[in-house]
Image 1 (cartoon, rainbow, N blue to C red):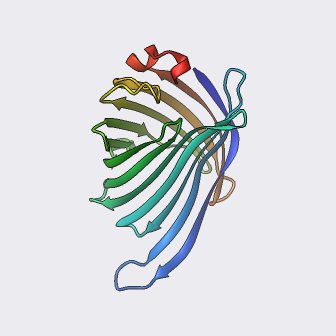
Image 2: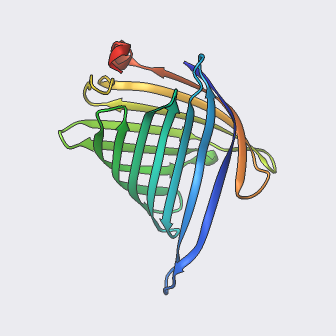
Length: 216
């Protein structure tokens, strides 16, 4: 499946510090990382990713909402609440909770992962998830920002998910379940807003691909 992400606007709002102490003060930042109108085989869904971070450069509490809306209904929605602890100049430990609210039935996961910045500014994120009934899952992300001009940036990204078990109710199979490759070209007319256009290729894998569409 191929998707074309039409131009949209991103916004970042940062509040001033609200706690004075001997250490670095605490602040809050709201980020609308993605808000895109997607052209996808006759369907025209809207996808988003928004986050609120509260903390300082060493430790932050993150609240994240990601999802997609299509044909008048909410098709996908994930909510994350986690603590991010800086481990050094290039690594961050993340631990918390993820809720899969859509598609139904909803699923709750405990989350433990690590984010790294490697050579050539390549960024990676590896998160493991543990369900209350013994289910397990894994998500891996890889990306890099390429500055083409002072306000023009190309961001290629790769994401894949894997599951330790088959869940017919949510339409995922054991093993690697999907892969998504995206490339977005960003233009920043100001320091707090960005417009972009891009393309996304997504494909189910393995046992997930073999689950009948009516069950997804």
